[in-house]
Every structure is written in C-alpha cells, then in structure tokens.
Length: 384
Image (cartoon, rainbow, N blue to C red; front, side):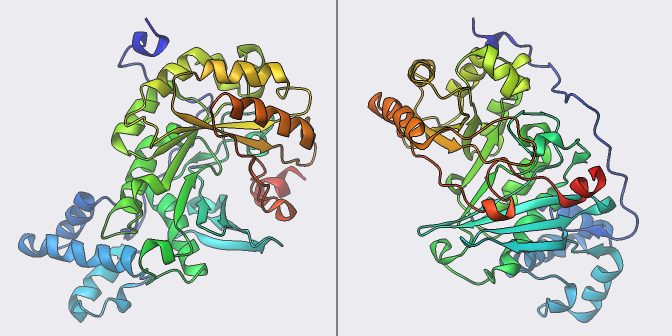
C-alpha cells in the first residue's frame, strides 16, 4: 500500500512553527475575498433585504472583480442611499504599495503591505505569449528550503483570501489591465502560486481566492491558467486538486531522500515516494494537464547525469514536464548555479527519456525578483 493511501484521512496538517492568528477585524468588513455566499450573507446582515441580496451581491461582484472598483462611490448603478449603507458597513481594502521595482527585462516586483504592517512580494513577468503574475500565500515561510531566500525569513502568518486576491487586483491596477477582453489581450493572463509561502499550508484561503480568480463574472481566468506550486504537503494535495482544479507544480529538486532532506526539509515528513504517490492521485492528471516538476540546478549537488537518469525513472508513468531552473543567487547563499553545459547535458538526458525539459530563463535578477529570491525588504531591514 502506498504511503499516501495508508495515511489516515483525519490526520491534521500542521506547520513546523505556529502562525500568528489574524485578529477579528475592527470596523467595516472587507468585501474583497469573500466567496459569493459569504458576500450575500454580509449584505443581508448589514440590512440589505433578502429579496435583493443576490442581485446586490452580483452587482458588487462585477464592480470589484470585473471593473476593479476601489470605492463604493464608483458604483453608479447603485442608489446613493444604498452606497451610503455600504460605506458605513464595508470596505474594499487591498494591500498597500510600499515599493515598485521594474527590471531591465520588464519584470515588475511589488512590495505590498498587508494588515498588521507585515509585507509581502508579488512579481509580474511579461513574456511574448503571456503575462504571468507570481503571488504569495503566506508572510514568510516555514519550510526553510536551503536554496530559497524566502525560506530564510520566519513565518509570520497566513494571508487571508482578501490579501491573496488583492495582489491580483493591485497588479491589474498598475498594469492598467481592466477592461481588456478576451483574456489573451490582457497583460495578466496567468497566475502562479509560487511567491512567498507554501500554498497548501493555507489551502482554504488560497482556494477561496482562486475561485474568485476563476469566476467567469470575476477575474475570469480559466483553471488551466492557474498553477499551484507545492513543496510536498502530501495530505492536502488531492484536496487542492479537487477543490481548486488548477494545474500543479511540484518543487522537487532532488532524486534521493538524502539530498532532498537537505534541500527541501519537508521531505523528512513526506518523502519522495509519498510525494510521487500523491502526484499520481492528482485529479485530472493527463497528457493535457501534466504536472510540472520544478528542479533547481545546483552545482555539484543535484546536477549529475546520474541525477537526471534517476529523475526520469522516479516520475515514470506520470504525465509531466521537468522545468529546469538555474539557481538564482542571493546574499549568503550556500550554493552556486550549475554551469550552462551541465544544465544542457541534464536537459538532454531528460528530453531523450520523453519529457519536455525547458530551462527557465532567469527573470528580474537585477531586482531580486527571480525564482527563489523573494524576501520582503522589511525583514531584510530588521535583520540588518
């Protein structure tokens, strides 16, 4: 029996450190991030007649996510007295901009402040055929992956659904992305949950935010334009596939438990065998919806020909592609990037085995926005 199948269904998923719970909000309730039923219930509780609640919820939904409204005054199809009721009871709060950096290659990195004063980073990556927004799910991270700059930052707390979807709304503001149809004409066409934090340690909020992103009357991105990346929180993987239905990327990075234990310490809880069992159980897994295995190339650590051959044997039978990521250095990093010819040889072995093995072009390195480099400026300042 596989390790995935043998795990009790009621086993709680916990993090290695305690998160700081977010206190109940004082004052107006934020409507951003509320699922449709919760939005309707909030309107009723504030005095909206039951018979009007569904219509009002639909109007607000379109203003917030279809048109990007930041205040109730813009909602001109609502009567003034009803807008006054909304102002009295609710807010449309989003993360606040601290800094905005633009790389020489067009990559944009936003440092955003959320409730309580903590900060997160969000990155927009423009490409010829798409525009990808990399969003965060936690403030800091608990996983301490040794090659990742974010992993050197302590975990503060989970982000709320409002703070997760708020990153998308802010980026669409900055990119002047409202009103562009169809999706292919937008500047943000894809979302990846590959920023700060482990999404599956915050699954409920991630799910609610992504349901808004996928809603046809909301941000209206198809589920296949959203990719969730996990380091391997095995007990939550299938639930994520069932409840969100997006694409999956796995932060893999090693072909033996001995090496992965050092690079991705969560492997000590759920090892490679358990992780691959969960991958094989991923809903909708097919050649059309392959799993992406992310593999950071570390010189002399995981980049040998033997590693490449072990990798293709491990994932045999799983519809997949291997995304090879040249290591992106950061101050004090204990690793070096594999040499270009070593990466090319590794990719050739993987490709010969029948797996696509694109080598990711580092983006935004000059502003510390590349994969594995995110770490909020406020945390760096505190350490200094």
